[in-house]
Structures are given as C-alpha cells and as structure tokens.
Length: 298
Image (cartoon, rainbow, N blue to C red; front, top):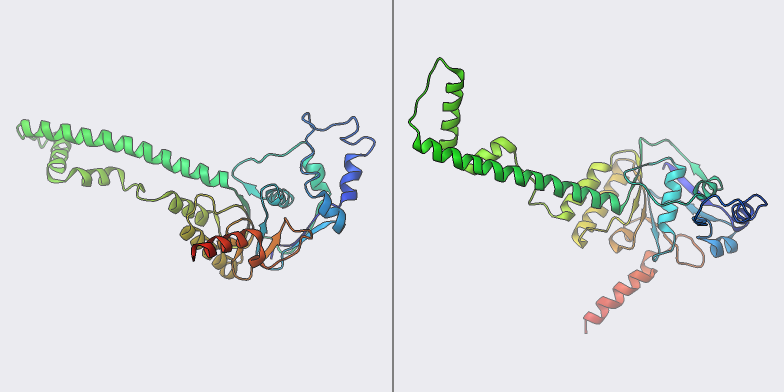
C-alpha cells in the first residue's frame, strides 16, 4: 500500500480559512469568479463527523456517489497531494491549493508511478487513434492509386533493363514487385497493418493496459465510460490481477457494478449520511439495477 489514509479538512478548518480577516470571503478574494471550490463540497458531512477520513485498507478502493457527490474532487485532491502525473488538466479554483494545505495523509512505501486516468484521457486517446487511422487510410488510398497507374504503364511498356545502370535495375525490380504481387500485399509490405478492426472499447482497454504498470498508484475517474459491460468486466479483472500480482494500488471513482463489485475492494458511498466502508450490494445504483432486472422477469 502506498497511501493508507487521507483526511479532508473539518468544517472549522474550512471556516477558519474562508472567513479569516484577510481571507477570501472578506475583501481578499483569491479568484476573480468568487468560486471557492473545493471548499464547501462536504460541509454537512464534515460538520457531523468532525472531519472526513478515508482509509485505504485494501489495494482497491471505490468511491461511489451520484453526480455532485464529490468523488472526482477527492480523486483530484489526493492526486495533487501525492503529486501524481496526469495527461490532461483539471478544473480548479484559485483556492484549490489553500484547501489542499488543510489535507493530510498517511503514506507508506514509495511507488514507482503515480498517475491519474480520466475519461478525457481515454477519449483523447480514441480520437488520436482515429486520426492516425484517417492518415493511414488516406495514404493507403493514394498508394493503391499509384500501384494501379504503375500496372497500366507496365502493361503498355516494353521490358528493358540496363544492367550497368542502378536506376534501371531498381525500376525493373519495382516492375516485378508490382506485377507479381496483389495490391493488398504491396500495401502491407509498404505500410504495415492498421488497427481499423478494433472497436473503441478495445482501443480503450489497450490504453489502460499500456498505462498501468507494476508498483504504481492509479487514481481512475469513471473507467466505465466508452466500455461495454464485457469490456468493463475485462478491465475490472485486469485491475484485480495488477493489484494482487504486481503490487498496484487503485482508487477508482465509479458507478459501474463491475468495478464496485470487485472482490475484496473497499467501497465508500459518498451519498451516505456517514461516509464509511459499506456493502456494495446495498448501494442505490445496485438497487436500481436489481429492480430493473426483477421487473423483466415478469
């Protein structure tokens, strides 16, 4: 385990910063918009509990909650506290690091890699791969037309070769290559094989498996996006194996039952009155799924 607990500030700590004489709520606003995010995300919960402390007792921790529950915020705060790498920027106010200064954590051993993976990262990778295919497709079409023109020209021309002229020898070799091989084989020889047969889900899985390496801490925001149920199950299985066999720790924000239900994962319900590890089978979204499939039985 690389991080065993993380403590978000109490209500009184937040209040002492926001409403100090020289604080942002009294004439010294540190952001033009007046946005105090991430202050005020958990005011009622931290007021009741004194503070909000998350314990990472297992290699996989799931943060569950409806939209606006703060699960992505917690991921970003932990990521910045841990100085984790990320592919894309995230939205933060001028008070983000004031809030971060109030947080605390219990860290264990050092990890080789700390990385945030978001839906935006996956979508950008999908677009990048699509652009690569478009470039490949255009180049392939141009080369196909070039080969077609060469075939017509070679059919019309007499075969001649000057064995003392290297250019003449190369031209004859090219003629033999074009006339003796199919167009598809020539394209593969020149350009290789593209991945146009892969679905978005398969490409997304490749992205995750490329990013997740041994002895790393990974903070993943809604990995279910772009993935079919079958692909979600495959990624959940991969995450479990990486945590068990290659010493990885995962903190995942998700609604998906395939990730929520990973065996032996710790699950926090951020919608609950008291935020503590819970039985994932009792979560609201799981109840919705259960009721939906129950109705289909009749």
